[in-house]
Length: 185
Length: 153
Image 1: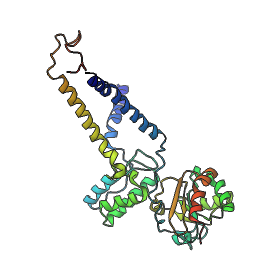
Image 2 (image 1 turned 180 degrees about the vertical axis):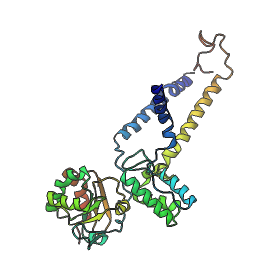
Image 3 (image 1 turned 135 degrees about the horizontal axis):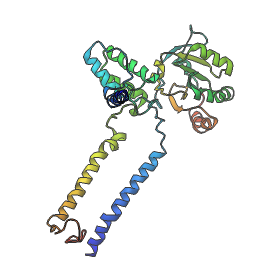
């Protein structure tokens, strides 16, 4: 009698409460997820092939082989993108202090506006490729500028940051990975 | 009368508008009807990642237009539906599909509804079994039931 009463109490009270607590825990974890950050399936894989006309000289190209040999950043930007304006100072600082070259992909933009932007605000890029039709961006799985990829010396995508680059992000996410990968032979 | 007509028209637009589909995709149909069918199906299954909770068929975001163009081109080049899906998954991951593939990381998503239904069914079965044979209370609305619920039998 006592035994079955204890069993009934369990089924009536403890089970629903446990279930509810588990549900709350799941929802709590869900609240801390940012649904706008979609993990890139490219991380850990080879950077996609691409070949884009250069912004400064459209007879020349920027392609995947330009990234090889040393650790580099690939930054997807556009003059229409407010987050890109926001991170520009940081990119300039990284370009002058970090020793890591930054390659730009100018995404769905007017090349003339892009050139003016770099003249006015300063140019942090080692080279910029113009992706006017957005095809290269799709191959890189880009969905919202600014996005910054960390590329290893062998052309592997080591990390992708979605949102404006900041020094905090640089220190927390990029530097440790660069230390592991090395800056190149 | 005019007011009434205005109201009627507004009402009809509100009622019928969404039903007629506010797809942003105004591109020409594909030449091959079978390909067009795949195209429509795919664009309604692919998430627009900039404007989440819309499909790329519903969205007028530039990225959605680019992805529609890419899908259209792949189909015209003779690629299959699976090729297109793989192309998108390789670049954007599972989240890009409204109907994610079944694999270890999505198993909970697919199995949870069935499991919950099963648990609910078992619980319901238990309750029915326990109440089977209980005398029906004389008065449905008032008075305590003949046997207190939960009393072990």
